[in-house]
Image (cartoon, rainbow, N blue to C red; front, side):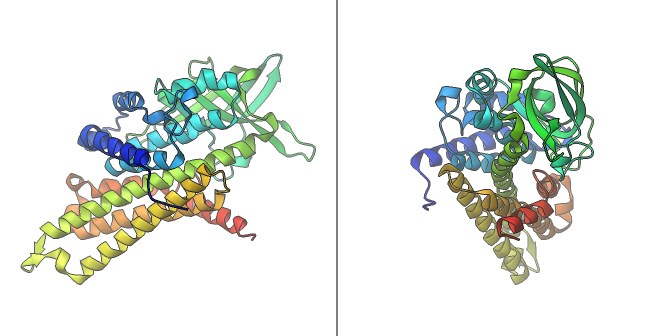
Length: 380
């Protein structure tokens, strides 16, 4: 395994960093303050090919790999957690299942526009009574003739209001052992009976669209079932494994931003006649932050590399997501501490990093779920 980036990966990282610093960073404070979804920025990102990085050119993508995509998520997340989260969800959860499991017709109709940046994708899994217990899905799908009729409710769904299509999971039958069969369905945004509401008032990532979806007798053609109707549960577990790499990359971006701000402030802020960066207490905080950020980044790169190589990566994606998300929270918290009273003020932005980082310990599988996944991979 060689972590030396290719020329193409370095070029993409620089291009995304330039775009993030020039276009996204100046608006990050307002995006957070006003809970403003930056739809125009996503259109620009689409034109740059960012929404199609990990997909083949034949499906409208850029023909890149998971490492390149993870680098892009990190760079966007470094300047704006909200934009980074919506970007990660659009690619990893919205578009990727279509690529992994879709028929050729489904890829042409639904994946190509997403990869080209002509719209966003969304993935409806979580329900009011089925969060960590995703197998407890209560949304129902009943086959009537050539269509499935969907009824149920989804919550905390990223990008749903701005999505071109939403892939939702639903119980479509019973196995011989009495357990539910969970299938995935591609639902175009304008389908009658589907209501999307975005009324959540969130602590962090406030500019990332988060919605509730209500499905009332939603009629979906049976050809819109995604992948094997019997294996929807396994399909979304595979989707989440990949999604955890992107959430980990986002966490690395926020952690890096926290370190950058804390280091710059420590060199400028003087107490007792010298910069506080000269005090060992502050040096140790910065050293721990730098070490954890680098370790988290390396874990993300390893998980991404394994995925690109077609090797098992479930355990490593859980390692990456768990360690990077907790690193992001610790780094943001230490950045506030180093800033002292100023860190508590919105003006210095590090408090935003902390609010944004907290979600990463919850979404795409809580830290507790990641530890369960790792334990199972160890054979416990």
